[in-house]
View 1 (cartoon, helix red, strand yellow):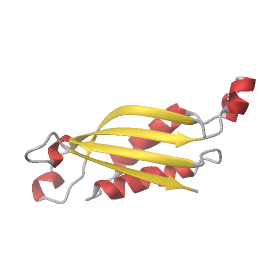
View 2 (cartoon, rainbow, N blue to C red):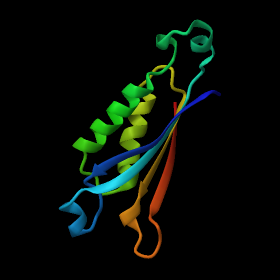
View 3 (tube, helix red, strand yellow):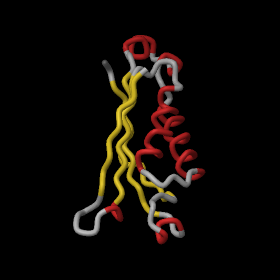
View 4 (cartoon, rainbow, N blue to C red):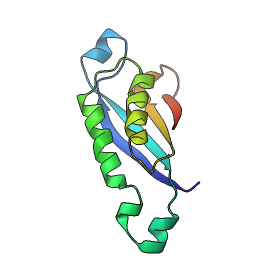
Length: 116
């Protein structure tokens, strides 16, 4: 399966379960991977035979800016649902990194996979 990856989307989100997390937005780093057959696009040089990754990025930013989830898992689920709404996408993978998610470490990363 061919893949398209969008890496390092930096966005501020209202996310978390603790009271102080519900007041101020926190930075998240989002990586997205979609599995799609890219051979027709490669042969034709036609965007409509691929997935417009700039549109995926735009929709991801929209989902995050409008969300107020408590859990990273719920936010990843919303992004995953959007990825699977594309006809050509066979699977999606969402990785979210929250630096403020760990008191002693560099942060917390979750990864979720979604399939049709």
